[in-house]
Length: 337
Image (spheres, helix red, strand yellow):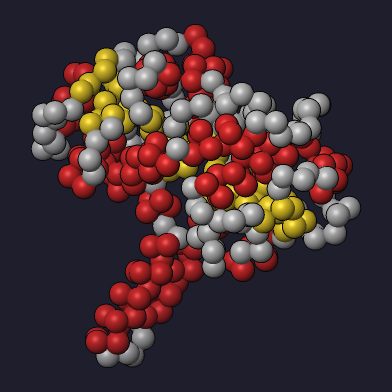
């Protein structure tokens, strides 16, 4: 498979992108197509001892910055993100990976790759490592929402979890501040009513964040603003808790053998919650595989984002989602909340 990689996207581009691609090449079967400024990539590769033999570099003289407006991708045809997305649309790659601006990536994917017919907006789908995996949809692509949009997320997420994760009749929940149906904003109340009336999903009601570790649902529907806050809170708390436990073990009076064994167990458990281990999240609803890696991705995270891109491309999930929404009675969008 050919994986298109935005070599200029992310806080640590291009060095960590190149290092991560090198790690992936050593472990996985694929051909990397790096999109970026050739002289910059070649210099960085030389400085870091990375052999570019067998890799293809697609020239791009511009790069979208993290603080650039998402719409700027429309007027910057030479930026690495746009070139990568356009090549994906042409079929010159099987998936596209970027650690660049989330807003620009979503805008570009919608403009140049296009959405699955019948879907109003794509969303970032992140698998949360709870007692059983929970797909959070949306985890940051759209900060505004309509009740109908949340119904689109529910159907896409349900099909994804059934076809990709093998879960029969996935349970769909709505992220909210309480379990009662009248909780939340007016938009959330309307979404609850619409979701309750959908016959092609198994809606289980509102889900409070405190219940999430017990996996009360398989798909957690959220607007991108709330979903992103939830995701980053979980990431931050997990890092803090594991570092605190690690410090407690280090300063304890346990014998060295006990500290070593405890450290190994802690490392094994913490790996489940490490964002770098998961690498990236798919833009679900786009007609070809687009993977969003974290903006501060290091080499390990980029490697795992490429792994995620390969899995998504091989899973046939997009065709399954497209088939799943055919004939579905989805509500129409109205004024965003």
